[in-house]
Image (tube, rainbow, N blue to C red; front, top):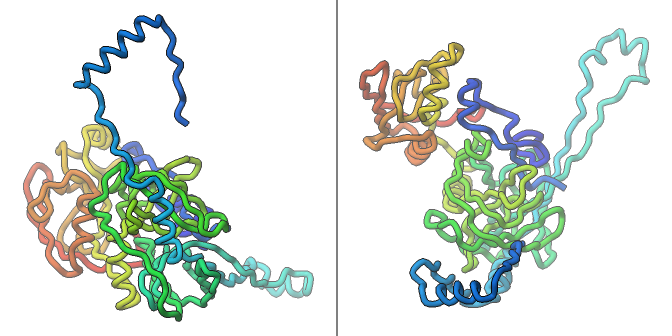
Length: 414
């Protein structure tokens, strides 16, 4: 729908980048495409002497000390079918549309142009933008989870069930920082999904995606959980507040908002993004995050995100060397570890507490921190107005500060 961060038709990282060249070297951005609003093992040939092969095989047969343990066989070879049959009816297609007015250059409003060109001047016209995404039903009375970018700016939202029924949907709320939205339809006794626990995920677990990629309804793809805890900075979305699940289950435009499931058919994530030009690298919002955000959206229609108002980066020897050798960086670092405060936003909670650019955060609430993600996670898990204790290093001296996180200003980006 949108043409920047919340539109899968554009790279996700156009909006923001680190301004300091050393930081660019420290964290290269990956170009993402947000989805939802868009319309072999190689067998080796082994040759050699037959006797040598036989002897080698014999040794391997009797010496199993170095052999990898066998993989456990699947309890049921048809478990994917069972998951699809169980969850499929609760996966929906979401079609959204909005009317956009074409903007004419201001020069065309000049009386000179009007006088001499009159009706030949182009007229302001309206056009309708449409997008398609996915979602899943979390309550029998019609509450549906999807991505915020699927319904962003929509005038109308239409929800279509697997059985063919269609309903007009109402957006109860959306949160751009986590890309979570809740849509409500007027219906009862609907099929629902079962929610799993994304905090206990391990790389290598089964991952099953169901959605409507490229307009192909009820498409099923499978793969594994490739990684967990991928920070928004790592995947090139520094303005997001999510630690993503990475999966190699095929995800395409239209999958956004659809469920990522485990082998038991429980939702472990909400599919949201892929890396442009890559294969087998997709991302999902952990269901624990989506559930926490959706509960606030259902209750109040909005979400309050605590924030400090700093830009930061985890210190490494290379970052320290780059900063100290660059006269244009404006920073000089003596510390070898911790989280470097690169910039403090004016009038932010951090600025009011006395935090300065160049400070190194060593501990937060008594816990050592080594990367920006751990600080962001701690802030996100606190409450607006509560106290956070920062232990800083400034010019070789220890400094303790108390910061009260404020509500994230939606018009700014931390």
